[in-house]
Length: 534
Image 1: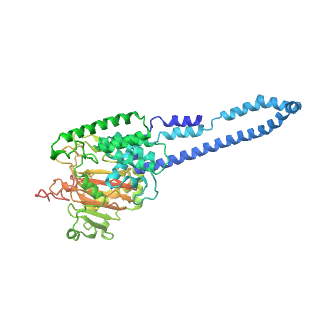
Image 2 (image 1 turned 90 degrees about the vertical axis):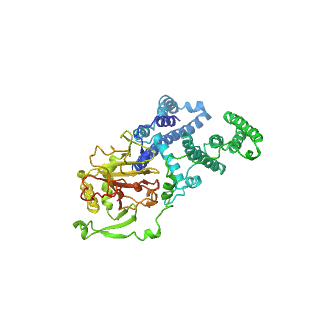
Image 3 (image 1 turned 120 degrees about the vertical axis):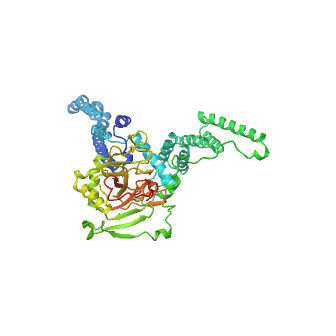
């Protein structure tokens, strides 16, 4: 029992690890190896305890036989001088040795290993972040709680289930965020699994307590009253439920009085709020964005589709691509989005990933008001920056982008490598600076971001598309390909149709790298036009 208390004591303090594991699947894989090491250490501890108990068991069996014989004729037994000597020896020496064996703590090695590894554990922010990711995936991909709980997700290799405790935890996370819509969904799922007979440390009273309040907060007073009565059937002395019952009945009685005194044409109206569903969103194109993530609402007509082609591209007679031209495919017409196939090799991808992994940090955005870099909830990934001078592969990739786009990369930003986390995403945004952000790239001194080049460095089992809500376009990740588009018209004006987003990764591990090319150095490579929108 002592070692159990020790382990709990070790686990209770706040984690010393750096937060943000949930923002990178690539770094989360390290946790798998950490946990495997702990399991091995735990099994070693169990084996040591079993060996100790086996020694104690053998000692007990030997003494049981000896004392059984001795107690039948105590005087005759100790009358034998050897037995008398051995009795003195056992009680004076051997029982003390047994006491030391029983008191010997076999957990030292395990506890030490756990203490060392614990500094690399996820913390509360990671757990809450992963929970919110599940809620985000639920909304984006129209998944019901039962589908998620049973692990019936597309493209999964390792099916996993949510227990009642897991569903209850998701509901609590939503409740803490005052997200009563998701609180209701997940508390109902927990309740269903309890009704189906799942054994759990969570009882129905706890679930109904959260559920009834979440339903009330959404304006469904009738259902809240029904759930409260159900809770009181299970626990008639529940103080909060008894108080809520009186309050709900008082409100309903008040509503009836109001309805009675109202005119006939108003008698059917209720004073309670209608069920709200999900909270009001800060993102105006949320519905359009999420539809595109699901592959719905794509606006490419057959007539426009006929104008999209595949071709071999030699980079305007670039010597490197004359004999081995790049495979080019039109993904979209306006804005023009081009995909290059087989443009980065698996070997190059692995080198880029290996260079980036030690440097991955939580991705940030530039605050348009202060100009400071800050983390935000709508960008869930980790990124690293690679310079061309530090590795020939990165330098070669940069030159390949220059050769194929015809744009000067000497004024471009470094190659940014990104790995997305649980439900990793980047909600709709512009790559270029708008007119209300005149100082966005002032420190670089290279002008605005004229174009974006995006490498897909992994396939994604489900989700993870790059979508353009303004025009209804979806581009799906395909390992070894890259997409390219201009953010600015030739006039230098921003192309607002390039507003885009990285959809949440539903299943899989998404790696990308991108190059933002700037205006400086492109004066003769992409001459300015007089028309604002050309």
